[in-house]
Length: 99
Image (tube, rainbow, N blue to C red; front, side, top):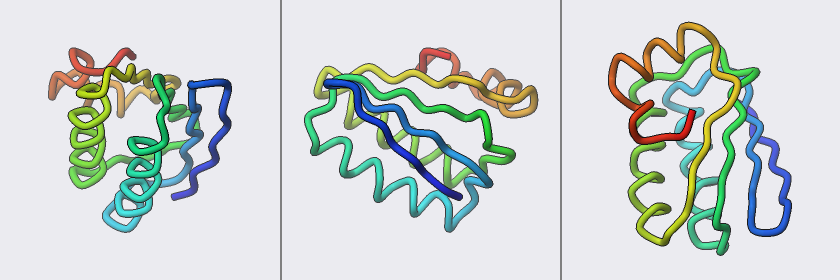
């Protein structure tokens, strides 16, 4: 998995690509820890090039959600493919994240 970030004021856009499997989830966790401590108010995840997300990746997103929203942050997820969007709906993540 690869992560590219751009920053627009207090908003960070994270372009994710590849598979968010166990190693990818660890990479994501490291990047998200920096965001939580960095003072951003808004994070947008662009899933346009993500072809898979496993339970470990979902777990990292949930931990990030808990920590980031506790500090008043907003999280958006964009460009989910059909399968990942169906997964997020099935496990009710569309109720937590702005998709």
